[in-house]
Length: 138
Image 1 (cartoon, rainbow, N blue to C red):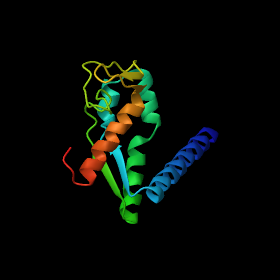
Image 2 (image 1 turned 90 degrees about the horizontal axis):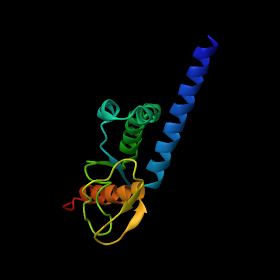
Image 3 (image 1 turned 180 degrees about the vertical axis):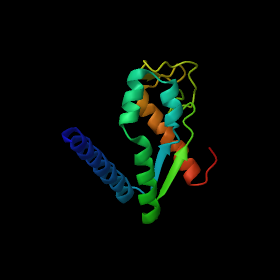
């Protein structure tokens, strides 16, 4: 019974955090851009450690909550395909041939840009999302 109550408390805390985070984005941004990730495929093809973090993050629940709150508030959530977002240079658009997940720094051989891999990908995702969300060709 104590364990069940502890799990229930944890679930409630997580749900509360997800609602507060979604509300923050909806209140502060008119257009919210997210990757169209397929968590099920990522878990099936991922590494054990990555799977645990992915499943623990409640990504699917967060996206549902965010989408619902955004719709009610008249905001837009734009989903972009994640293909090549981490392998494309956010400055010049060059696509790096291979970039293993263990490589955390993005280095563009064409223009010399060096930055965190996730920051580079987020800039590409934002650009793609704004282009799609505002009706501009990607």
